[in-house]
Image 1 (cartoon, rainbow, N blue to C red):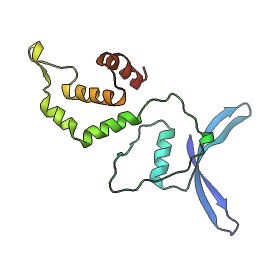
Image 2 (image 1 turned 30 degrees about the vertical axis):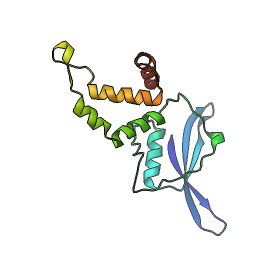
Image 3 (image 1 turned 90 degrees about the horizontal axis):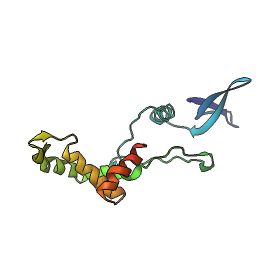
Image 4 (image 1 turned 135 degrees about the horizontal axis):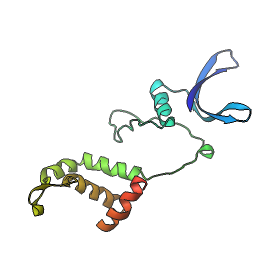
Length: 160
């Protein structure tokens, strides 16, 4: 997939530019392109983010709680949108942001030591502060027992 700049001549003679996300595919008659989504007029940062997402690259999600910026809105034709292999994301991201905002991560780090008292000072495989955060997040997202969290919830979130 790639971004294509489309020139449009208006009735008053002026030219207008907008962007479209285009996908290439092969047919018996040779390569063809189809428009996956019309992006419209957008700045370089938005185009770069869309291009990276279309290529499957990791890109920065931005912080959920931005105090200084107003959100930008984009119209989407929901008849042309589909989802595949969806994973839950929003509730886990929100729980992690709340833990950071409430500074529970720092509290867990101060209170929980990395050594396991019962096994004579051996280092834990997973730090206890991370384990505490994981338990808080999983209880926030899907309240259930530790057994369910260990056997099912983590597998579901990792796509296993």
